[in-house]
Picture: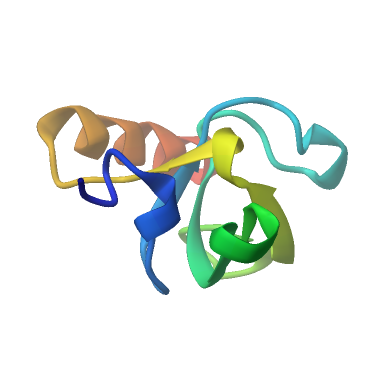
Length: 93
């Protein structure tokens, strides 16, 4: 088992993608990508992550708890690289 199949194995600084709009009230939507700051899945069922604009670096949500079922880890696959590009395109001016 690896972190791409088991969210409990996610590590600090891993990129994650949101799988739903459960955090829309905080400005985060399905497809948004953030970086893991801390993994508390084993103990509490969530990670602490930072979401920011990929061009300006400005925080969208600097510290937020994301439940383990609401994200997955971004891999180096072609499909995931396409998702990263789509996310960046949301902020391109």
